[in-house]
Length: 109
Image (cartoon, rainbow, N blue to C red; front, side, top):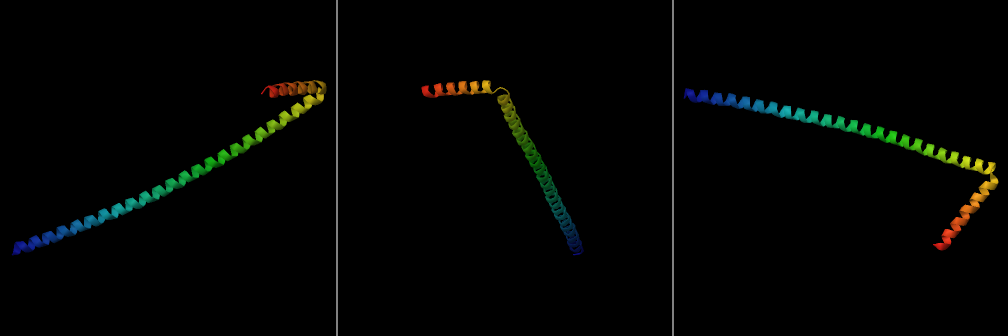
């Protein structure tokens, strides 16, 4: 009967150690899950910031390109007007020739 008591105590102590070990494992798993969640949140925030910065840069570059294109069109228009003012007879002759060719091609089509 004495051995049964010892065995019972041994089983109880072993059971306590197993339960305590399981509790530590569960705690470790929960900690790891929280760290993973925090890391994922930080990574998502960093990605969001990168995308926002890229969108701002792209928008700024698009505005600069549009401004440049608009300026090029303005410059080209001013250059054409200057050439017309400097050589009005030649400009009228060119316009007449282009109009005549356009009329010929339109009649054939």
